[in-house]
Image (cartoon, rainbow, N blue to C red; front, side, top):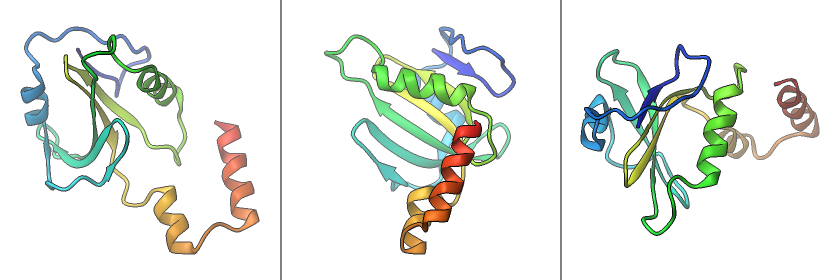
Length: 138
């Protein structure tokens, strides 16, 4: 399944018979072999959209063959990110699902909250209040 949600108001992934996982990885080529981050479900890589040259973050999640389909956590993440519109929340640009992997394409940002906190030695009470307020406005 492939779905570009950049200019879409609804998220309805469709089966793209021409877009296999290999083709999708060619559409978004990794710029570095080492992942930017790793988690329980997969890795995040810096990549480039071959069509536009745009630098993106490609989250590649392995789907467990024993489970039935896409994990509910991934479905929730896609649903929430599709709806959230805020300058301080990374935008979900594209989604692709094959039998073995789920790819989420995000706008690329150099600094995330975790890195910011590490650089600043934590967050002041005022910063926490400011971030919380911004999140509540979304």
